Image 1 (cartoon, protein in one colour):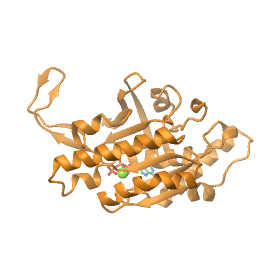
Image 2 (cartoon, protein in one colour):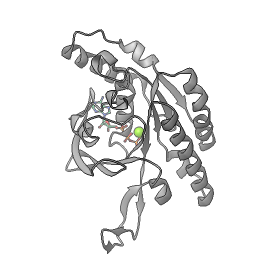
Image 3 (cartoon, helix red, strand yellow):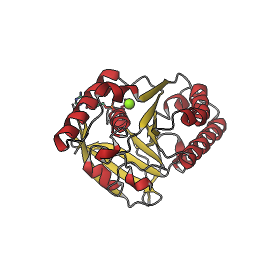
Image 4 (cartoon, protein in one colour):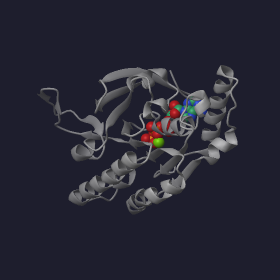
Length: 253
Ligand code: ATP
Ligand code: MG
């Protein structure tokens, strides 16, 4: 039963947004937000938490981290892993994994353009057959190479649809979660509620057709120095907003 191996976020409030189970396996979940809001921190935290052993009611899995921006910092991952192991050891006397093992179980792919991104997602099927313990695939971020030098919007839409199809196949064939990190972009004249506004508003990057490709979409934002996660769209969950923090230890309540 997939519900038995949730990927907790280390923030109970965000886990509750997902029905108390954390980021769902078998689904594509997108987190969008402005620079510095904590998308990469969350991606790293999840790559660690997916490894929480089964005897501690974690998924006992491994992670694939697809880095399009070069923002994954091993030293930061080590810091978050150390804090995670520390807090697990305070709660339980069950055997734990060590920090070095955790870092070795984050399979890291550095991507330099969108062709590489499409290619790596294509080979994931074979890669996952050889690494059957992988239960999380993070793409950090989806928009980076699709926003730069992309004049042919029809081609972009086609490529993104193909990519989404490949990712959907992965969540359907393997017991894993796909987490996509996405940037925000400025849009003018959008319909906010019932009012057409001329003011620029921040919306998730990659446009309308991409917005239908993920099962869950969460928007991360600041208000008065507090970070919030807003589940805006889900196939099976209720909309909601909760506060969260990024600390030296990682994502927290
Ligand atoms: P971008 O769109 O630029 O990739 P992002 O959403 O991925 O941004 P992150 O890099 O995840 O943002 O978050 C960076 C923020 O996380 C920092 O501004 C800081 O607030 C917080 N942060 C990072 N490291 C630490 C740390 N060691 N201690 C406390 N907070 C930290
Ligand atoms: Mg980032």
